[in-house]
Image (cartoon, rainbow, N blue to C red):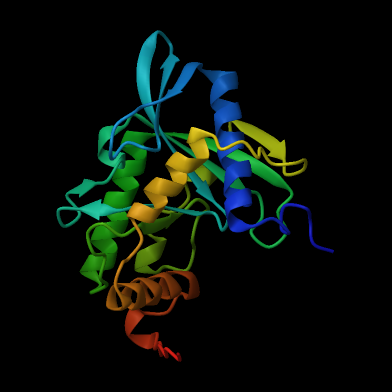
Length: 221
């Protein structure tokens, strides 16, 4: 029997995870507020240990999370400008029961994304600027280029865990709109870009090289 969470729409599930991230930040830091300004729509400011820190919230329903590379992988959109990454993830992609919230120093996340980018592009894979590149929270033992950088959750335990039950917040709050806006900015916007993005994503999840993934697009009026 499907859980209540599994029966929700993708947007509703994302909202639940965003709320979990915000709740964890509220319980562990002071003064959570969204940083305004174009290009920073999913960046938040908190007070921690007497210091102001910029936090990027990411959600994942398959325990992989993404940041888009910029300038041929020498910079990362959002990730290059923050201090902390908070990832709200389901505990199990196939049978989710809890939201697990992780907190990582941005330097550690940048290091892992840099290593993963270098491994993938070094193997001839395409990671175009502006499109999300995924790194696994859990350690990926397949030995693939996409495996490099994975395993943050194997080193750093969650800072909070919440059950995935109860009604979602139906109010049109800025937090959810902000994360949705940032996600859409990283989506491919041409048919060719969508096909390339899908090929790369399937290769990552399946463990196959990109050249082994063949896609056929048919548009029927």
